[in-house]
Length: 114
Length: 112
Image (cartoon, rainbow over all chains, first blue to last red; front, side, top):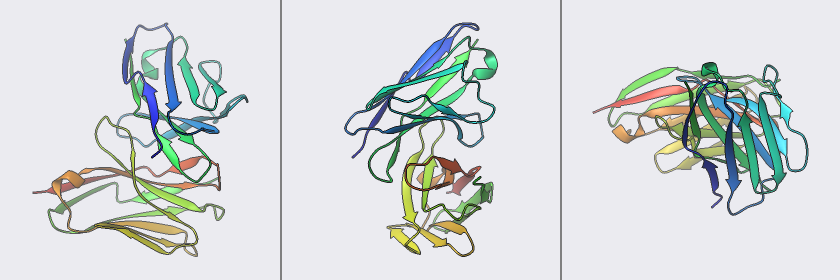
């Protein structure tokens, strides 16, 4: 079946630094990648949608200059949290969509900013 | 835009009993409704899904029903087991290739 690999699974960074999260579709071409954020005991909230080769579309309230998304190929999308602050600490999950209705989630990245 | 509501927010059942979680959606264009199970600190895992051309789907102890007219769909788990304890999310998409809107989640606890 479809597999999406997300790295790193956990990252701790200092306030003010940047963190890059990778999401790879291993056995299918992901025409669309979605990035979600999940705070403790809350649901998944869509941050942005990216289509290969195009600029990402951000949801209202998500700062595009802070959360940089690159979807340069059909198998890789990256989310970079720039100048991270403690309030950015969260669980970040990607989801990749291929040629069917199927959506496959990555394993998630727990970001802790200290 | 799409709005997905989910009830109850928490649910406790005795092992062996059934559990039912209900969701409603607002966008009549939604045509795909997956259910995800998320254990603490892990990714959401798709457990069952249903498309708008079907009213019911079953996979062993798990079933989902869809009422398009009323815009609601439900997850049914029978013969619950402790390992069913998790947070369950329903979701609705906006059509092919569109993103999901997730419900707020239901924390299911199966008591031994």
